[in-house]
Image (cartoon, rainbow, N blue to C red; front, side, top):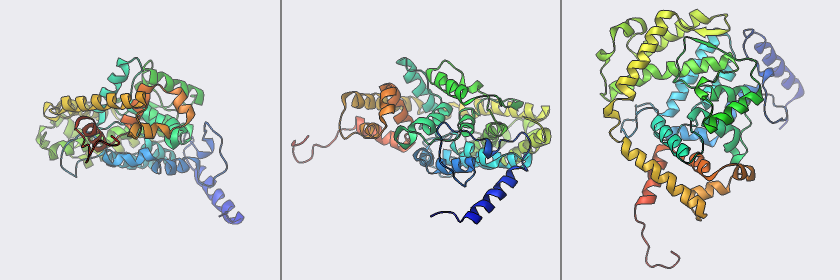
Length: 390
């Protein structure tokens, strides 16, 4: 179906007019860059990227990936799929108030965490240690998110997302909290690729990367805003902490419920960032947020009660990693990893070591898929009625 010429031009004029009202330092869709040229599409560039992200295989796997708490039978606990929606909503709210490009913000937000392993940050550490053991670089979820969209999706050809979206995704790391966020608007696509490749090798600290757009900065701080209070609510639900445990010096500034914390942080950030080329909090709010992040690490993320199954999870990861490597090395037929590997492009196969292939495959698993794969490796299998064909 072709667009009616008059309709197409009317829509294009309206979209252009809308973009012209953005803040002077917003990134417009007309500035979008891609590593591969494409044909014309009426959709704005970053809006189009959101479509590609939500229709990707890796996006669909958000549904059963851990956010913080795993192995709990409670459907109200945040999973990765909800976290990215919360990040997107918070980031778009900030972007709208600051008159930035919401399409770019949404695309970065929706795609930022696809590179997470099963069992969250704990799985990420195990996988990174595995690669380092064999001299195969490192594993970081933000780098893997970039890798998925740039190289792995579409059978090893990538989704050809815009450079600005890919940059925001790899720079998103919410573990780093800063009082001021500015962008590196001079960063080139070639520099971005260099940073990505060096991060894979483990020779570049990806957490120190600076986004090339202010929209990327908005998403980065929104990641913190989205998880900091929500994780507390989940921890309270699971009886890991109590609301009264929160220090008054923090709650007097931010509030002691997720909704209040999110509201306070958004308002303070916008109050201190409107019509500026950097994002910042007021000193009091930033200090309270920094202390709350430290409190969360001590009382939630590193809580011994949360970690009682960690040794078993590590054992499971390592068994699956080595089992998949053996199958790949031996070319074992009818296995999941070889079925996946056979579907990948020749360029991917030629340019990727087998240890990294295994990391790509296992990191993409959901929590349940990892556990079921582990059972396949360790549980005895029935021979059936006889040994023929076995």
